[in-house]
Length: 167
Picture: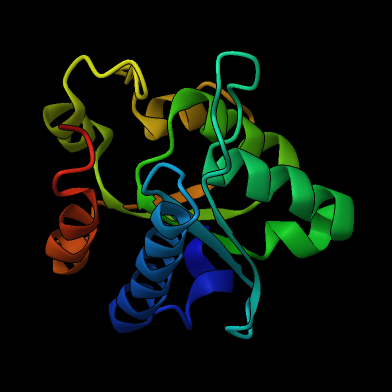
C-alpha cells in the first residue's frame, strides 16, 4: 500500500500539513471557516490548495477537502490522483472523505481528529460535526486509500487557527 508514498517521511508530512495550516489562515482572512487542504504529487509538488469556501444554508458543501477533490478531479486524471496525497488540517468529515474517495486520491494526511474539532465547536450550527471517522468511511469502500493522522506535531498550529473562531 504505502510503497508509492515511501518518500513521504513524517518530516515531509509535517511540512505539508503546516502549508495546509497557512491555507486555513487565508480562509479565515477571506471570511470563511478555518480549514485548509493541499494536494501534493509523488514528487512533492503542491498541485492545488484550497480553503473553505462560503458555507451557507443554500450551499453547504464548501468544505476545503470536497472543493479541492472536485477541482482536482476536473483537472487531473484518476491515475495521477491515485498517486497524490491530500493534506488537511482536520480529519475529513464523511462528505469530504467520500469526495476524496470518488476523486481517487490515494492518500490522506490530517492534523487533528474530528473529535477534537467537536470539542472546539460544540453545537455551533456552522459546524454540525458527525462522529464518523474518515477511516471508517474508507473501510466501507473498495479502495486501499492510505490514511495518516492525527499528526501531533502540528496539533498546536491547527488549534491556534481555531482559537476564538467558534465562540
